[in-house]
Image 1 (cartoon, one colour):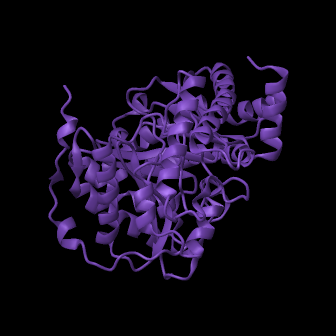
Image 2 (image 1 turned 60 degrees about the horizontal axis):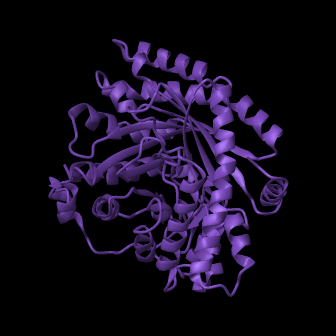
Length: 451
């Protein structure tokens, strides 16, 4: 599979260009855990997750040692908890605590799936479940939550959109002593996918097998380093180089995913080849766009450069593996990308430009800190805008906004670790509350009718 040259090239990518396996994520179905009471269900959930994922950390560490490839995060995703707790939604936090306890027992980084799928309408049990999210995120350390509020086939559930604006506000308020980090563990989707290995949006889809291994590979530094070698090439040649680089990165992910699946007695799900940045220098998607020549990320040309990057990454990945999935492309989280942080501090990038970039990237408005006094309806309006982009363009979009309590524009939020830091960015002052309070649904677009 690998020539001597391939091996040497991969070693250089790892040692000098920040290539890593960003996450091995085990998806686990919890449907077999449902019992008559919340307490018994929670016990079954804890036992099953600990049993299924017992060896995930050791296996990841063994593979990292054997192949010499850093495996940064070990994670678990589970069936959306709103389904597991449907008979007792007010007691869903018991399951949330059981999952967080399991994550700590296993020694994994994050566990995703305290989630609800309400893209068309909100059942009463789901409404009650969503109201528990702030409390659960404030009282757990490794649990992540997501809610899908729309899709191309169903339109946008505006009741859920309104609720999620309030949930983001309350999640931040309850973790005010940590710059609102509760909201950083929460994401709202349109067109959520069932095999995403990345947090905070990972959950195990009901169409998946009992246990699945999904791997996320990341290499912004590798792509930037490759482009530095052809500084005067035209964009056709640049796109070809990105494709070839993504091909090499994906092959590494496929190798690790297949071996991890075998050792953990789980199905090999997908490789997600998203360029997921970190706050470390040399691991930035923003710097790739600047290497392409946009001057400063956020300036004119940024959206076009990101579109080319995203498309080339996907094309290279699908040539390397028949199991490419998840989100796969380029992420643009502000607090997790040193280039984005710098651009936001300088005022070079704004929320409006980030929104335009989400039309062509792999996710949406991600890890953006805004003033703590931002009204919930304004956050809901941001969610509605992003959901509309996803719905119309038949792509996944998301919002992970942190209204940082007590802070305003000019200050900074610090979340630590992989979540990084973020300057507080200004939002528009116009009041969208009448629009949000109308409720109802934004209907699915005409091109959704394909049956």
